[in-house]
Length: 110
Image (cartoon, rainbow, N blue to C red; front, side, top):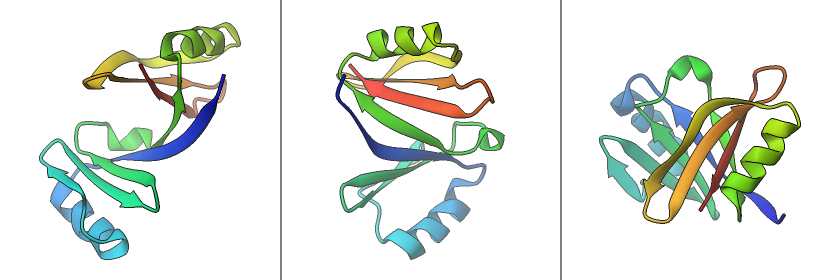
C-alpha cells in the first residue's frame, strides 16, 4: 500500500484574514476561490478551507491508491470515522478518520 503525505488542509473561520497571513508566508496562492485557497510549497499543498470547523484543527492528508481499502483497514484497526468519503474533484475523494485519541487521519485517493 504505497502512501505519501502531500497536503495539509487548515480550517479557517475568516478566509480573507487567513489568506493575508498565509500569502505573506507562502506567496501567491495557485487557487484562490471562496471555498478553497491553495498554496504549493515545493510540491506540498497547503490549503485553507473556510467550510471546515476551525476547532477541529488542520488535517494532514495521506495519498493512497485505494481509499476504500485503506479506510476499511484503519477502521478495522480501531480508527473511527469523522467524515465519510466524498468527492472533492473529478477522480479525487477524501475522508477523515480519527485515531483513538481523536487526532485526525486524512485520506485522499480514488
